Image 1 (cartoon, rainbow, N blue to C red):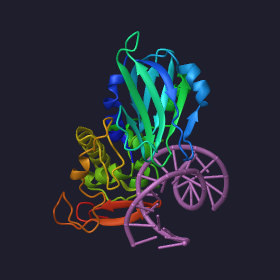
Image 2 (spheres, rainbow, N blue to C red; image 1 turned 45 degrees about the vertical axis):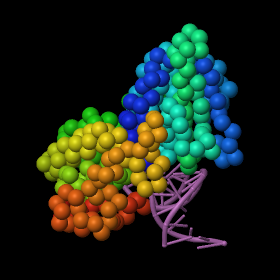
Image 3 (cartoon, rainbow, N blue to C red; image 1 turned 90 degrees about the vertical axis):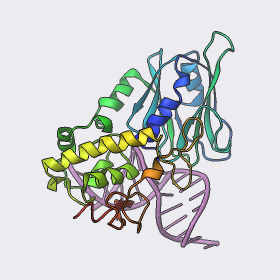
Length: 282
DNA sequence: ATTAATGTTCAGAA
DNA sequence: TTTCTGAACATTAA
């Protein structure tokens, strides 16, 4: 579930790691299937020992620790991954524990934890060139917060797919997931099954504006913690944007935007889509 | 006790 | 080339 706003919140939350040095890396033992960590943990330790965290970046739905050795530790939370400074929801699903020090000695110990209930998340150490390939090699589209109407049209204007499905394609635009795609299309007033090909210039303008508005607002509320309560910020606190969802997860309820329409739920690419028939006519 | 559903990404197929 | 399907995994609800 972590999409752009949740990952952005994680990155801001782990800012205390900035300037610290990696002292140790533990992989807590648990009976669950281990998550994918590349390279192997021993190599990871060798390459990261003594490295200093000089920047923290978000790339689409990934959080990245940049080191002074020109390496990049990329966390991909996927469904249920979390980056925490302390206080994990449980120890059973702790996947990686990084111990950081800020002073020359033991002063200022900082812990960085990767917790993942389902275990679909990954951690990868990349070199400068492979990291550049990830960001600019066509694997990921432009960041959702950088999109303009013209960029949207360039990326998906000629596609025959439904707009909702296209918004989820990270190669076209990076950072939007199932939840925010629904909220964006509601504010843009566009039916999720409309084909990209059918959309007008005006539609792309509305999508672009709605994207910025929804994502920025969600970041302000530190993301969405859904019913299962998995998503938390770096201090294990819930997000608050779920209280402001207009359509997502609200099938049968009145639309919070127009207060007239009844929210519908359909399935697209085997995922739930929520929309308001009044705000988003076919 | 099975089965479905959850939502992200990737491999492989249509 | 573009688009679609199923698998990866753990947990909960039906």
